[in-house]
Length: 380
Image (tube, rainbow, N blue to C red; front, side, top):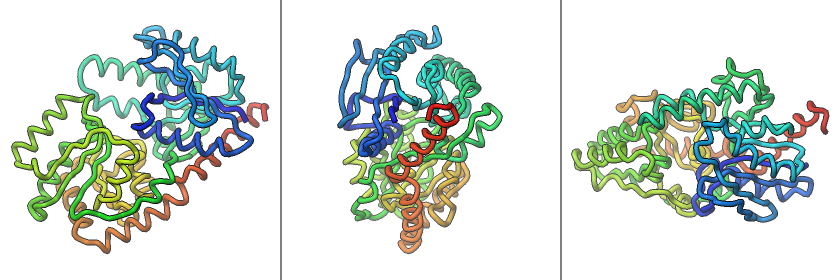
């Protein structure tokens, strides 16, 4: 089977985001199979001319991203992508996201599936600044346009299917994201009272609420530490407000911003974290939840998006309603002060991760979807 994947993919492979790392694990797994030929195409704003690189046998082609591509409905981007698709002659295209890549796949004339990673009309409310909001509105409308035309959607959590039920007639295939086997091999040596927050520091992540919860925890555990591992560039005003809160509450010794970490560095963070905390107001299913479950790191999270689909409260983690700062603090204290509870939650979560998130299982599920799609298109 010849597969072309359309996806945003960084040029710095040492520091991949969640979507990119998931694709890297799948590429590695799928190309171990003799019946799969996989190529990746990505449209990149920092590329002046077409650039080709290889990850093992997979050719990754970076094409220039058109400036102001939304203004012409990505036609210039489509032209570059379609030229490569015509040369490749794939059996199927797998597009990631509901923007330019979904649009290019749907306009290609080749059977395709679209993975929905984020739901734009839900995330839009957390955008800041007029230019960003205008782009977000455009993206949400384009998302609806693509979803109306899509026949097959990959839902990384059942939440996606529920949210999109009234927007598309597409078949929804529930296939979670893959994670590296390395997360299953993390050597756990938790440091006392250490909370890990991995993710971009952004308003929808409600990091200010997490800081407030940590300030409550600190009253019981003065030595509690919050380690924030994620990008801090996109929302500078928001990040500045967090630093102001930390200074006003004398929490400089309790909070550390680590910046963007490599996978190797993240594995070390999972190894020494007592728990992973998410305070988000909007999520689909963040890869860090899957990674923590595999690494046997107890989870305390808001019950948003697809998180409750995989993290059963009091079984595989502890969940609170979004905005419940007191509840978040209370549940973190439960884990931080009760090693027996922490071990029980982590063990149950690990069993779920073994069955659902290993790259080998996810790759096989995706290949089964591809074969079904091709059969329905009469191309099997």
